[in-house]
Image (cartoon, rainbow over all chains, first blue to last red; front, side, top):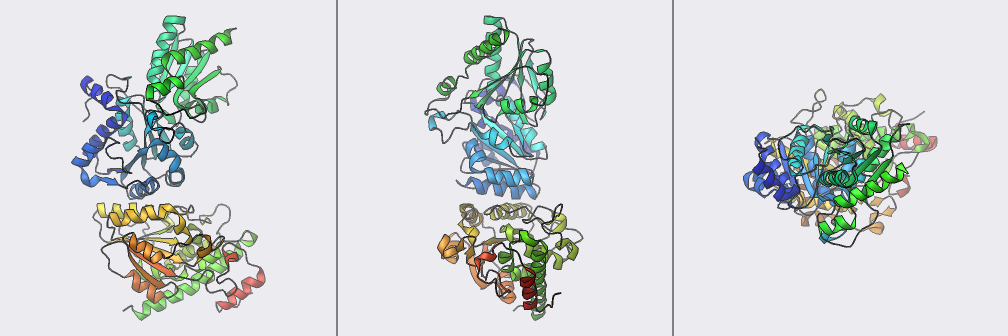
Length: 327
Length: 277
């Protein structure tokens, strides 16, 4: 059994989302004979070294051949196994898009695709390795659940939940090592059920992945500096979207904000906007995410600042919109 | 030595499969169908379904069944016709081919109840599914079933085929068989002109497969090759003729996907020894 004690939560945060995934993988191996790990030359990178040494016959390395890896995982899934296939998020979503579409979308095979280093945590490796489009690509394919955990504890929870649900899942792992902690104790995680982390009556911020932490920080700034009260929601499941929670977030608040470490095109913001487009009464929406361009290769912190996703920058954008609305 | 009666049984089935393919193509009318590549794989289908594979029509998901994956999904008319010979489908079922609401799509759609293991259509993906399936059977310590994947020679242009080919030999998948329907034609013309992959035999062998070459229209040679015991994955290059059995279609790339006029239908049927009305 996984122990969600403080020291573990601290350790997982230090390891980053890949390391936390590895912790969950080892846990799953103990509790289920069906769970397998498949990778394309990223065993170590996926945090699976311990898994490999403990369960060598349950990890298949397909080499640097991601498209084949997805098909192999699909074949294993059809025979009753629960394979997790790991590679960089951009290779998972973009390079393997057709394999994902046919095997996970069309055939609905019970495999889990793990997109490592989504967003810009590997920004120093340049635009070939960052992933700002993966949610958009996978969200447009029917039948795939998309999980985007807020921190390393939620990564552990999401991985375990992904294994338990009999459906294809895309697990989007983001954030650097020393991933900020959102959840510092055990809590209830359910696929498709967003979590309200902070209440507030002026603005509702719906965030996903690493931007949950930054949104919490932005909410503090909004309160301290501008006396704006913001509700903050962790939308860890991007598909299926928790529309009930969105309805609730819209009800009393004047502005709805979405924040994500992903392109503004096709991600969480788009998903929320698509849902709300059917409503006749709804608050204005501000979509915060990456602008539609590739930045020069740089470190994670540097790129987050360049893309204007630091807490202060998020708060400023919200204030600007909020004031304009009032005027 | 292959049992003579078995060869005869497969030959009889080939005849019926070929007739059914012509009928299905005629039935869909002007939209046409992928008849050329279906006719080239007829004997491969009859050898597999009537001579080699184990399955149970009354229990389609029987754990010990052999798995067949049609990676060249557009050739599916031949598979549907073979599934009729095997007892999974009826003549009426075949005539729903490509009609609205049918189970018999122009490309296979996953439906184990009628013996279709996986969806396909996007080329270059079936062998990876075969690798996953073969690995799974080994994991389950199920030594009985074999996994057969049928690819087209044009399909071998896809890089993902070779990713899967390398993976198969790396994991020593002795329960996996890849069959290449080498009819030497693809959509835009002769494979040699569009993208030469010669020699296919050498390529599969270089990728670590036990590679055999057969006359893909000889049931006896196909059965013989499929019975080969191999400790490594087995590749069979089946040398075939696109449009085989219908004189005006043979080796003509325009019959990759085409429709039949009434006159052409009658001639095609007559060439099978059937007087059509």
